[in-house]
Length: 419
Image (cartoon, rainbow, N blue to C red; front, side, top):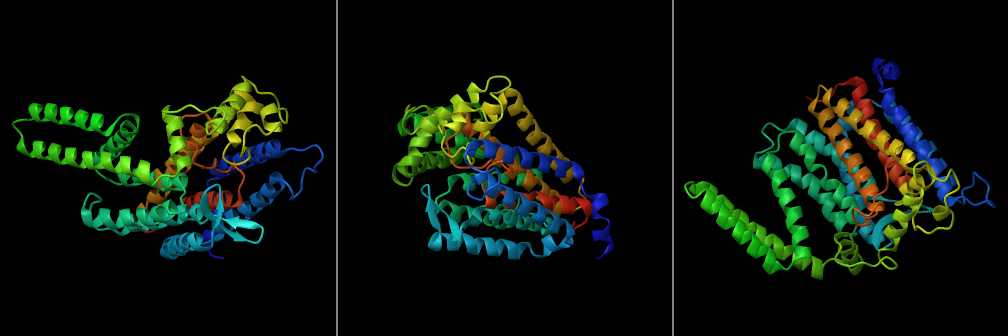
């Protein structure tokens, strides 16, 4: 064992590990509450809480193994990790098991492997390698195109499953590119696409296009002396119009009925508290019923009587809200924010571009999961099946999040790598 491995206990960021362990503990206790049965032993593989305990042990072992590896291992093998996950994403389309309308799992005995979870850290590693070895600015097309290709390939395969939630997580990595110098107008263009998407669904195509025409006329009048800016506005109008028509086409011809219903519910186009909106409605009831301090551990009535489906996975935050109340919810949210700030701190103190880019990728992925999952449970976003990191039940998600985080901890422990 080399000097680096002998001294990693002194250099490792134990604060991040403590936050990780706290979230694991919170996750297990709340999964146990979500599936608790008086007639069932506390530790049994017949329940999700028993299985999750095994997953936690495996995750901790995986984390320790990562800390024992050489930090350069992750840079060297990042293309191989990426290639393997791409092959798994292809394989799941052929041999995958369909669960809840998504063909996203590969059955391996009694265990189900979800390749999209592992693709997140593999893609982050290759993205970090790409950005650390480029010899030009990220705003140049010769740099942007291969970088976007690295992000787009797994997204396209995941969309084919279709798994909109995981695909959304990958799009959050655009903020990593922004940190590395991507021009602000890319983010503005992305924000405009989101606004156009919502307005196209809320109003008619004709209304949105007329509004764009009025906006274009005002801009042309305001900048009438600058021909170059006017040409840019006209091109933007044409692209926006094409986007409006594409949104309408995708919504009517590509999205599945249950996906359209979820979008309609969140935008307030339809209301169906007893049908498609049942999950979110019951979720809000469970969280609201917890009050300030909650009903107490194992005392949640919404939890006990299974009013909220998938309560140990996608809707685990309902159990936290009902049994631990507003105070408990704030503590959990606070732990996540503390962890995210710590990750950003670790990323910023790195001396290598590879380490820094990877650190920001970790922050983006965890933040996207954290934000979307909680927003989903309180009705601010559509239900798209995104787990709460380190807390939701699931072996693939827990192990992959552990790998994602502990690679950063290992890289930070040496603060070395390719500059």
